[in-house]
Amino acid sequence: MADKAQIQEAIEVQGEEVRKLKSEKASKEQIDEEVSKLLQLKAQIGEDDGKHQFVLKTAKGTRDYNPKQMAIREKVFNTILGCFKRHGAETIDTPVFELKETLTGKYGEDSKLIYDLKDQGGELLSLRYDLTVPFARYLAMNKITNIKRYHIAKVYRRDNPAMTRGRYREFYQCDFDIAGQYDAMIPDAECLKIVYEILSELDIGDFRIKVNDRRILDGMFAMPWKEVRKEMVSEKGLSEEVADQIGEYVSLQGGMELAERLLQDQKMSQSKQACAGLTDIKLLFSYLQLFQVTDKVVFDLSLARGLDYYTGIIYEGVLTQTGIAAEAQNSSGAEESVSVGSVAGGGRYDGLVGMFDPKGRKVPCVGVSIGIERIFSIMEQKAEAEVMYKKNPKLLSQLQYCEDSGIPLVAILGEQELKDGVVKLRTADISRADLIAEIKRKTSEA
Image (cartoon, rainbow, N blue to C red; front, side, top):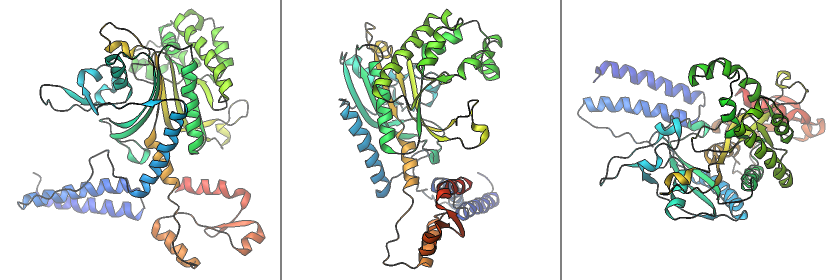
């Protein structure tokens, strides 16, 4: 136990840190985390005095939700649920924990994030890491070879949480999967259409759906080219020769025309795996054209989702903000979209069910998971503009309310502003045409 004077000094330093964060109007999660540290230090003083002080807090990486937040969550869930049902899916449920061996070896490097439970009754158990592996186990156990299902439930990851960005240790996943034999790429295209419909309906900002194929990636790494540079050489153990040229390929983006061009590429055509992936990408885009969603879907060779069970098409839905600066423009002068966060992901996993089947019988599967917590974070931020419940409030009262509530910007639109065609933002008059850009600029500075 540290010296009492040292603990007291640490309490004063930590108290100052909490006061500073409050004065800077830091996020509630950040303040709560520092307050928790302060309480733990104070508890040590209490222990020295022979008293135990219980620290009242939620566990790391978890949170409570108040009624206002739950109303937002309910709206999001209903939107997603409506889309899943519209596409003909039925729901299932599985236990929150599985036998440890069910989850072992399915997630690659991410396996270290699985929560193991203490041995109870002779079974080694772990909390579920996602909803896909339990689904595959369910199919194999019940000898189901054809189903379109959705599953909305909590999963658990022993991660370092960044709660302000929607990363938790306990969180919901909203999964939609199609299992069974179908004509190539039709189920895959439907999964992408579902992401398109949900993100469009939620109206949380511009988005792109990046698409690639694990066979293209595996084919590229199998070829004797030059590729990936420092990271790949040092971390993945590739030779520098196999490293430099992957850079040329992974920077490519496009649609069906890119797949056609790569099928004619002399080096790419050396890999049967890569050619099979490119052929499927080309077919996928033909269905996406029929679904009228190609305006948001891009074939991106840099996409490499890491889970070991993916065998074919992989995709990721990302929120974007259109680049404004000149350097954000590509060679054709068009504006590039900058990714600001993944909100959906999935792919094809044809071999996973066979891992659980005693005879190794495979059931082709493809699915998508909606990153619900990040969506909640964005929608909660959008809902922060409150209404002042007061009859005919004076302007000064409204300004004071904004100050007390931590609302950073106030737009004033009175008779004079209407006449001049401007909006007063704080003390500056901004033309209506420039208002949105100015609000974006000021909020990004905050």
